[in-house]
Image (cartoon, rainbow, N blue to C red):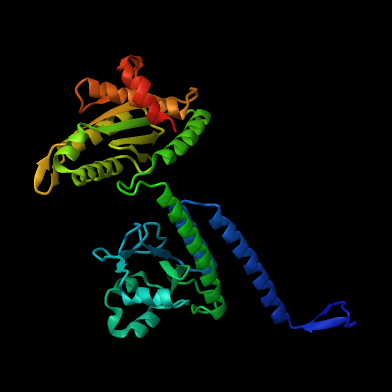
Length: 383
């Protein structure tokens, strides 16, 4: 028994606190401090991938597990909760579809209750309705934790095998409350990241917006200047796009935009940034790349579009694009606006010399028609 001196109005000189209780209080204080740091960590990041990665490592550390994974809706209109690619320590079984429909009873259960479950508990509750979640068993889960924001489920966490420190592998009530608190903080952070994603994404093409592109480009130019790195900017335009709208209607034009955007997104590197600039124009930012490699990637995009069979209402169409490239070489003074303007000049050199080609900006690119330079180009770059 430990005696602590306490002064108060009742003139009680001391109070007896059992050493075990004191240890529990110290742990609770420590855990509260940890939650504060976790909250700070989550709130400092607005990229969903980084939030998820951080959350998984934190949960593995706090709950002493060897693996962790998160199931989320990977699209704004997704009808399935799918295993996020940032899972840690999980061994996936080939041929298994790691996703569950938003209409499955397990989703309703996780959404309407505010508690954690083991896989065995879920199976016992769902009984005959367990079909469709058998994939969870292959992940060897020790606990399944819902992530909720405003009573809406936006994901669920699967914790893998626990590390036994001599206290057994069963989660105590205190640990379950702790992981639910962490999950609540993570759910808010993921929701905020998704809202940022929505406001910076063109909803039709799923590429980034023009304004987001410029904000990233300015940061990348600053970094490239300090680190003496190269950048490349592509400006891409669909040739004779107006004809698709006029001949087949705007639904056809939308299909062409979506398909071309998909080709761009699937061709550039993961670290690159693709955006819809406006109308039928797109921009791409490539970091730490030389001119030859940039040209190679641009040509790959152009040739893929040219080779694709575009079909709308059983009508087959040929689509081509023109591309302009501008290069930034480290230590060079240039603004984001001018770099995009140079790519735009190179694009219109491609258009004025036959279309369906790629041109790298050079001094002769300034010789494009004055009307284009003085009117539409200036108006579109102004932002």
